Length: 112
Length: 114
Image 1 (cartoon, rainbow over the protein chains, first blue to last red):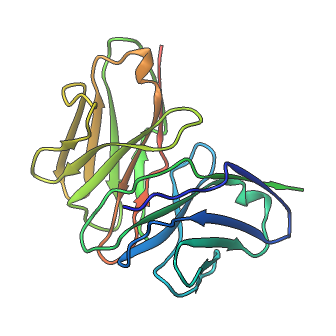
Image 2: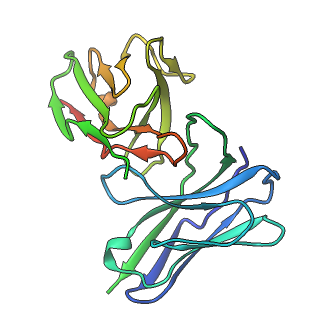
């Protein structure tokens, strides 16, 4: 699975959009970009994933560059409850179960 | 949505004793579950893959005789930390993936060995 690079930490004002970047310059054509987050002392929570088109769900939007070498997770209106470590993971999506390889992630702090 | 539940959420045990952690898939069957470990301020590290009806697969450096995994049914996997030592104190998390969806994680178990 391709390696990802994320900033160590970011701050965001409450109510503003949080834009979390992820670099995955070695991504292969059949690898998806997944985002999970981990609130302190909890298990990770799935947020969103995509292949090459931009995706949006009730939690966030995922913007993937045309060359697919980077992506941005957007939380449109950050709240204090969005304070967490956000993990960008790249891997092939296949049938069956598979483990996820977590990097260090980005610690997002939402500030009142 | 799919739910993966762990029990207990916190446990304190004495050195030398064994501790069992349960991971259940509440509304789906999971032939495979994954066990991760997370030390303070570090990321999740995969320990082992639990396979229903067969032996678990352990990652390099994880002692299979110390971390016993049993996956006796399609909804339950257990991790037993045997002869626990203070260095085994960590946050243990399990994961499972329903068919056609993404991976779900348990809420984690905080183990403290004193």
